[in-house]
Length: 153
Image 1 (spheres, helix red, strand yellow):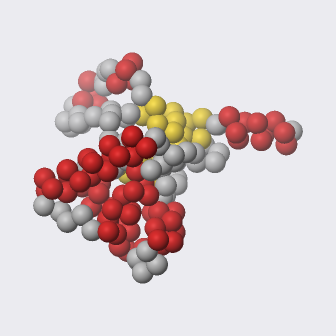
Image 2 (cartoon, rainbow, N blue to C red):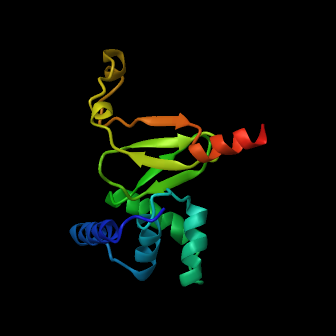
């Protein structure tokens, strides 16, 4: 699913500000890789991003896409999402949020939940290190896969 035009514009502005603040050049290739992740909430993997960007920039390499994604993650304008045993996928929603992951098709959707944000980490876990953030991942079967399963039965 595509994000709204306003959200996409906001993400691109944040990317530009992050580049200016850190002194990173905003190249055409970097912008296209970022735009491909930022324009959707489907959390694409690197190969999908590469295939889509390559339609606009035929000379781009998969290595460039991987290096750009790592750089964008370092800038803080996207994050890496690991769903089940799937490849790393990328998310341009930088506000604190959680994920719904379909265990069957791998679909990932963002959700915001104040109750989950307030989750108390057990003291034993806190003793393992300094907590930076919490992230809730709900693993389920999405509606589409559940319907498909009912149709097959």
